[in-house]
Image (cartoon, rainbow, N blue to C red; front, side):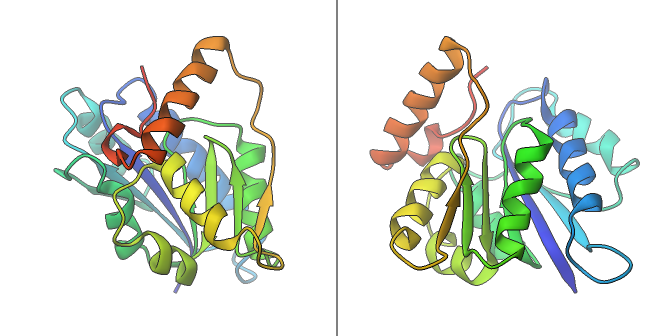
Length: 196
């Protein structure tokens, strides 16, 4: 049985993919859930037809991180839904770029302690498996779109969603985040990915 599934939708992210996967592995090994042996986790790297070296870098990481599985050749906007269907963990943690490991750990632990989901806007979504399957398995969305869907569905439910503010961002990063938010609201899930 797997406790945690990290879902990483990717598209042309050769500059950041190794750091993102390593952060997921670091947090997966340190989460305070599971049994006396620690949490059992998997990392699902889902590539949306990258045209750069993202897949080559993932191949190198397989030898270093045994929990890593790669799914490739997914249509743009479909990686997250596919990851939700493939995930074996009871807790799903979604990230699509390197982030603060403390925020990543915080999100996972909030759900492990009883919330249905935890959101760090534009950074991390942690959600119980049954909620993720119900809300995201058939939806074309990226991280930001998934955060909006989960927040809308669980926002009024007791212990529904825990929120944390994102880390400070540059003006360019805030602009990219606004563009992702607008794309997600317009149903353009294929455009909901980190910019270069």
